[in-house]
Figure (spheres, rainbow, N blue to C red):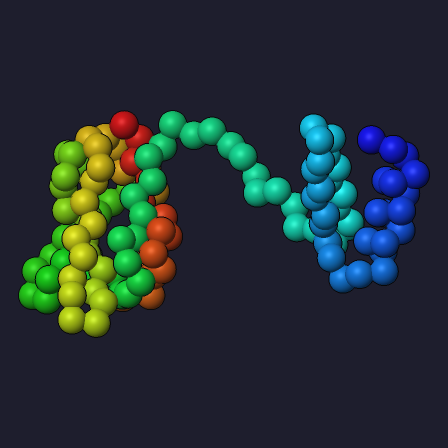
Length: 124
């Protein structure tokens, strides 16, 4: 790619409110990011399996009048109930996707949760 073109694009980018710019043509490509561009999300590996909220709503460990006490370090079976998320007119079950040891409880009774928010972490 022509360095003159790169300089022109860089100079132009400084006059805009864009944080990044990508361009490609005939097999050549350029990607320019300013300091204001958002950083890439952190990537990490973990042996833990996250159990995420199935919906936006309120987390409950058990039905009214019943108890379900979850303790960090306890063993859970695959499909074991871990509570439910209440939305407008519907209850979404939260179950263990695998058997293992409950390593972290990241939610409290009555907490407002969002779709995809990790609620528990299980070590298979």
